[in-house]
Image (cartoon, rainbow, N blue to C red; front, side, top):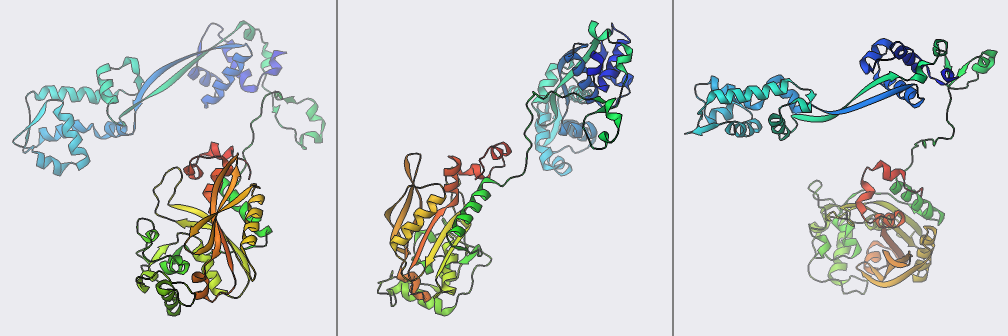
Length: 494
């Protein structure tokens, strides 16, 4: 029977509107008759009855003009032009200078502009009006307009409406929907006994099944053919998920992770890596130097070793860079521009201990923000130091790492970096194209010998964001840091 398919709110509402079959019931009338306080209950019940053919719903929509944030303020304190005009009319010295002292700067300028358009002028610095009554009348009409809101748009003065639409945050237009319901022939035919409200069961519980009461219970029906919404659950951000995957890959390959400070000295960041002190990368246009700490201490023996290496190559057989060398430049504080600054310090603390270490951490460079550059990003770095380490070991390690990351086709090409020799550029094949993902090489003697390191050191690094763009199919690096929940939910689990 039709009554058994109705929910309790639908039964109550149908019983009410059956009482006057010719009447069109408004929302307020339904709420009052049904003793409801929540509009959503009435609207939902009305739609349910309409869908079952027991009632008709008539909806009409209209634009309603109401006060916005500045409009509420104007209603309480008065319109800006009204307050300024009242001040002009009530003061003996209505000068621009005095007005600026009586009103905030952000009010004085716009307020004077509003008054000028109403016929108020300045003569010798004093406010005057040829027709003060017309100014007062115009302002009174504007104030009355504000006081009349909210109101239907079609009922308002079009000239005043256009005026206030041109002013920021004074009024806003919203769409108001009015609903009316009336009973249909089928709805009127539903018997009163079918409209008795019963306790409905929407969930089967163990408590319900403990006795026989479930046999006589009324159950809420559900359409199992409808699509269900997918429950949202927490998940890692794609960048964090990629970092964890990289960590797992390095750990599987027998590496250990190192983490160190963002703030470093120019000495460890550049001098230790045989980057000359006049290199363009040291300029303030490329590196974030710090005021605090502006300078940091470095052991003098380390500074002396770097100075010898840079000036004449020291005992390495290199000719160095020549020119000049400044210890003060080495001591300058900065935000690290690469994670190699930390791995080289780790090697300096353990010069005779074979190691395989990696880092995935933030670095900072003074880059202009665009689709492929950010001033703050992540760098991935791996280091191998052991006796007998060679170029073939480096290439094999690179191919193993990238294969585990889903890029089995890897090739290397000769390149140049100040602190490695030989140096390589690493490329992987992605969707039929070779893409450069990082650099690699063997540390030069100018880097290792001043630190007491005698074994070869293999090193490679790459930008994490570049790899993320590749894996996630992005063409704009900024997408990785935008709080776009829809995009985040649709990303694959890495």
